[in-house]
Length: 289
Image (cartoon, rainbow, N blue to C red):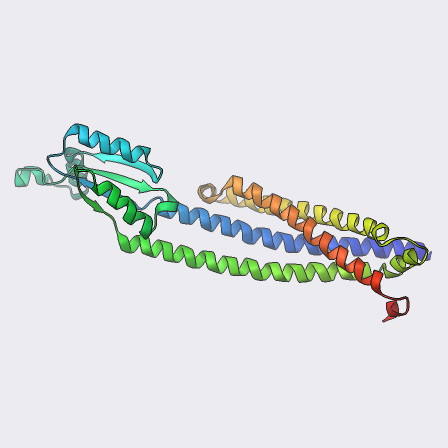
């Protein structure tokens, strides 16, 4: 009867440990997904800022082609679209609703190239360097962009990233404390078993081994449960709002799932190791306090 009661107590503590670790890992994973999504959104915003390269009226076709090829081959350019004078006039006419060329007798709009930069280069320092490179071409008249927009996007992105990182850091500390306390309580219910094994001559490594294996197993199970819940939430969200696919980085989410699993194993294993070590160091009398 006492053995059955003890077995049930151990099972109950194991279930409690798995539930607690799963919950904490789920919350960490959820914050991780929010961070990844925020990063994806920020990249999307940065890569949709338009930069205009206006060409001189006397620019020759081969000069324009050379510039176009240079921009398309550049590591910092995501896309580059050439717009001739006639195309620019047609777009303006469509937007305004009047044929201004016929009205004033000539087309004052210059040929241009509209480029979008890759997210990593959409910052003030990189843009200044890119601008200098482009203005070195003799066919280029002006490099134009909304500097205030670039600064605003980068500033807001940095703020959001900082806030999320602080939340993740705080939750990580809370997670370590909560998981550690839960595992210590689970080991506490088995402290007499630890001391009995020690008294009959079992080494510390021999005693730790089954507890560590249980801790690692609990970490794996907790990580799998947390990932299944996270995956279910992502699937439901994408079903409900298909546009979320644009800010969902599948590769990073798979990486995050792996990190959640590793984190579960690591925290559970480390907490179990130190909890067992504590009771190995206690004397038989101290177990009752």
